[in-house]
Amino acid sequence: MIQNPTFGPLLAEGKTKQIYAYPGDDSLAYMVNKDQITAGDGARRNELTGKSRWSTITTANVFRLLNQEDLATHFVEQINDVTLLVRRCTMLPVEQVQRRIATGSYLKRYPEVSEGTRFDPLLVETFFKGTCLGRHRRDTGRSQN
Image 1 (cartoon, rainbow, N blue to C red):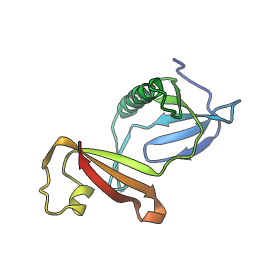
Image 2 (cartoon, rainbow, N blue to C red):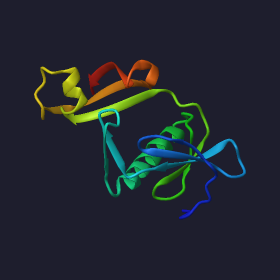
Image 3 (cartoon, one colour):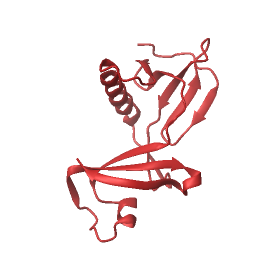
Image 4 (cartoon, rainbow, N blue to C red):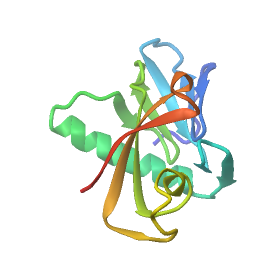
């Protein structure tokens, strides 16, 4: 693994990631995870030391599995504990949220559910991202898988 890759200019930054140009190849970029957790569409932010490492490892493992099954992804390789090399692409404005416990924005949408209710199996929600949809997200359905 490369401990200190040379980054090009910052291309984009979100709540939990930074995207940098890959010097010498405009089709690639570095995706760097932050030690940041958010809630309420980013209204609440906290630093969680080590979160970026676990996010990077998990993401790399999921995309390796998808690539092994011949499902095309943007993933090229894991560079270090917090950095992935990826192909540049247009992001699909979709977000998947997995919940084990009812809290936060979930309770605002479902006030009949008591805070702390445990979801077993895990609750999976799908949202659209984008300011045109209001505060970055819109619920498109939920399932317990």
